[in-house]
Image 1 (cartoon, rainbow, N blue to C red):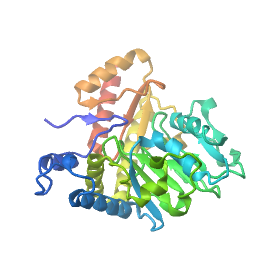
Image 2: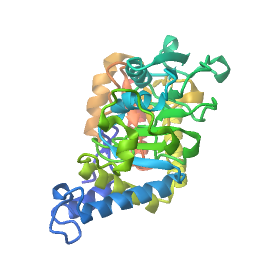
Image 3: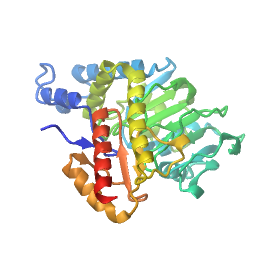
Length: 359
């Protein structure tokens, strides 16, 4: 039987080819006699895995030479603290956009370290859009501007990179590697791996070199980008197996044609699902069409009483984890890189059939 389609927001489905390769190498990685899980992170075998993964990631994203690539722990939530600890550079102020639940968490953490200016805020409209650029009120003394390009919970995505004249810090957890990205427009990019990159436990950070080495007093050693960069992300034992799986995903992405090809594929999947929702007269998506996410598609049914039967019947049809986040309700289909077009088509077909029977 084919595997079910997993629409989880994260940890999310991985490419089946990657899982098969990991399975084949589980007990003995390329004649080493060891599983990757058993390797010393400083041994030649794992060092080769780590170096290849970084090289492939740099190639995929065309990372400029003056950026460091870090493979860290702690998830994006740890970055909520690391960003202000490292990027304030004595200024004590930072701009933040509040466009969803993850933005709110980043803001709450940053307030422990600096004065936060909310440059734009869409909470009053339940995070269903992004305020127009001309309405933002940026602080001329801010050290950086932080934003969340894609809000996984709310399904809101900014499709262009803002220009503000100061370093940008961005939480790309749910969109990194889903399409091409101009890394050079950012001061720091970070992403939890468990959406498009690999299993939970790994965090990717891309940081411009000149922004390192300026931590606030009292910054823990492990939260200093410069320390982690100097030691090749191995100041302490890194998440070795998650790093290895991410490396397999990078190779898979290259075999798919790279990020340009993935971008076309991801846009096609999103278009298919949104068109089905909009044409149904039954399902609804609450997000401003200009800011709809390619990765996370929330939708509601006409009556919440239908939610439980929808989820139960979807599961029976091999369509898993479609329940919306508890803070939003309804449904949410996360359609990351590993979700094939056939999976989205299966969901669309099921939605149409469910509507016929319950509409």
